[in-house]
Amino acid sequence: MKPKKIEKDTESRILDAAKRIFIRKGLDGARMQEIADEAGINKALLHYYFRSKEKLFLTIFREELRNFFPRLFPVLLSKDLTPEMKIRHFVENYIDLFIKEPFLPAFVLREVNRNPSIVAQFIGEAGIEPEKLRNLLDVFATELNLTMNEMLHLMVTIVSACIFPFAGKPIIKQVLFDDNEGDYQKFLNHRKTYVADFVIHSLKGRLLK
Amino acid sequence: MKPKKIEKDTESRILDAAKRIFIRKGLDGARMQEIADEAGINKALLHYYFRSKEKLFLTIFREELRNFFPRLFPVLLSKDLTPEMKIRHFVENYIDLFIKEPFLPAFVLREVNRNPSIVAQFIGEAGIEPEKLRNLLDVFATELNLTMNEMLHLMVTIVSACIFPFAGKPIIKQVLFDDNEGDYQKFLNHRKTYVADFVIHSLKGRLLK
DNA sequence: GTCTATAGCGAGATAGAC
DNA sequence: GTCTATCTCGCTATAGAC
Image (tube, rainbow over all chains, first blue to last red; front, side, top):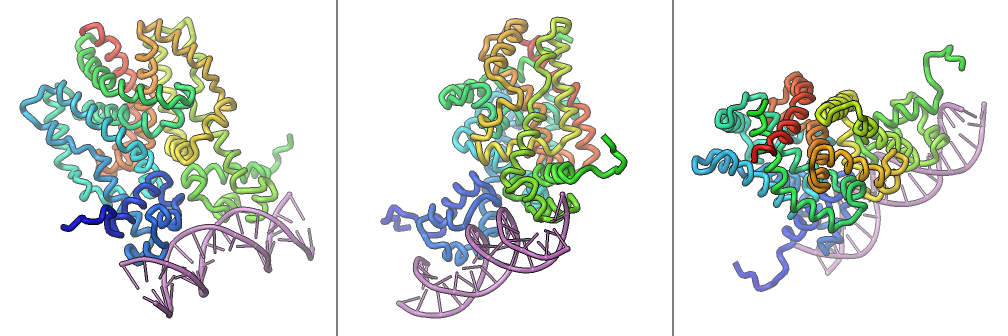
């Protein structure tokens, strides 16, 4: 409890560095030397603290998977918000998260595809309990007058619309915005209201059919 | 022109094998030995035909990027189809493509994030000309009475809704379907009509506001 | 064209001084 | 705890026989 020095302790420095490198390069692409350089320490120290590259990676991945799953499930159960407000809240916060952590979506997608069993392995620690989630979606489906099947598609569609603009940044930025970073960033900011509007319009549009 | 033997020539066998391995493991994760085994030939032959791992990879990536970009732009310009039919056509064909090549989305996303400059490098050969695309979106926006900005979001939303269910398969299958492959596959098949309906409802729903 | 054998290097991991 | 030096192995790539 005496933070006299501005620098954190070695373990924290390693974790910060490993996070930055692994998130950008993945397990296969990252180098232990690179992480050591980023942390300003020696390569051997990484092994002293975390034994192996794999163990260090899993420490990072576990934490980042927690970030990746929306922390907004309590909000969806709130009695004080209309379904419309819940959707707006969810989308805005989820996109804001990725604006702060823009490499997170591509990182998680890369690693779960490299080793799919890692999802089941850490799903519990990520704060996702399948039964609870199923229950929550059931309640929300009733509220919106949707079947469970429609609810699953809706959920995936909303999440897709939030995540893909980040996971596909290199393509979107190049193809749609002629590689202009500023235009791409503006697009991301507009997207918070656009996606919510789009979803809400769709739910209203069902009435027309 | 004498296909007496069922087996293809060596170069084709290498390309087929390399495609399977690279798509699942990426450039960093793939091993030349693995590709040689998959092709049923010796490791040295890979270098004889393609000089280096990088060159072999780029040959594969270039081709797969072509597949990744929808070949449906001519369809979007057709005068015979209503906007609604164009959207249905686009979504159905795009999802069908990924049902046939389920690892393609994760592969492309992984590699463009590893090396973003690869997009600009191959965008021309992938049959995407930015000016033409911009023009096409402009026409389509007019047809749907959308601003260009709204049109870009719409495009990204549709593509997101088609791609993410594949790129995020390990997560979706585990979290929503308790790791049941059959349920996940059913979900994908439903999705072709669901996404088109969802988008069309949204465009209609705008009228209600 | 296709193989075996091996060069050469880079990376993860460890030994041991301080 | 932190460092330097080194071990060991796996991988890309090449040499050279057939």
